[in-house]
Image (cartoon, rainbow, N blue to C red; front, side, top):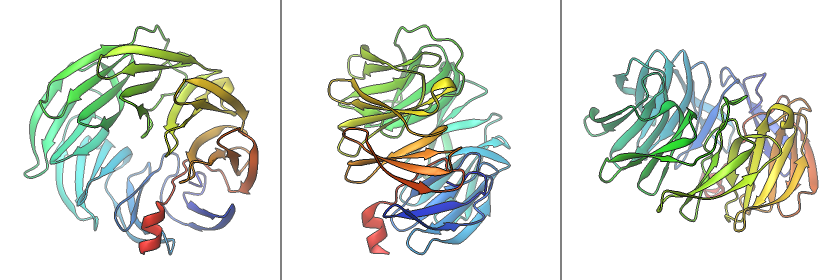
Length: 334
């Protein structure tokens, strides 16, 4: 993401090939890939359908005034709005199908089979919607303080909170909910930590502890803390390499120039890398050999060897933030 310009830069073989312009407000952009196309959601509520091979916007629609989260199923798109207080459901051609009014800012939206699950940030609730008829079939109240993010692992919807050292688990088979405490005593964080899309490993959740310079590992089966890893700063994103051997972490605050590589098996820090000037995000290559880090103030995407942390390349990209890797199979089938 070329944050300041509201564009998506296209990088191949360590070169910037061009940009997809007019994505929208770039302060927070998410990109997901479906079976044939990519979809990008901007902070000011524009959703764009893009062709990842041609680098063109095919369709674009404004669905919100303010939003930071959306998700895809095989046939649907769900956008969680901050303003207005809605969940908007569209088809893959960006036709609006249904709007769910929640009376809250919304976050943590995920599909599971014929369910749509999301958090109500201002009400401390989780709603479960049947996507066959768009009816709310379950409301879980008092889930925890200030929900900020979520992910689905197997049949569990795992909810993150900004306040309190705990997370929530909603079993999507039984729709029973419980809270897991991991016993740390963090302060209010400098910047909101997030659950990465790969932060579950071998049945354990790797959690960025809010207000703590560490990640906590919790066994999801026993619901007990399995360990922790001390870090050089306050973690934001935790991502796993595709081969599940490496973990990468970036930071807020004074350590925001650094990227940390961890061995996933023994939970040991391999290297703290001074990766640029404010590392906004990172992504592994498909073969897990490289890691790309967006150096925001350096106007670079820096590339490192994921095994030893040595720098491989530096790609000039204006004000880079989010990095979204196009799946190889998707690119080839266009």
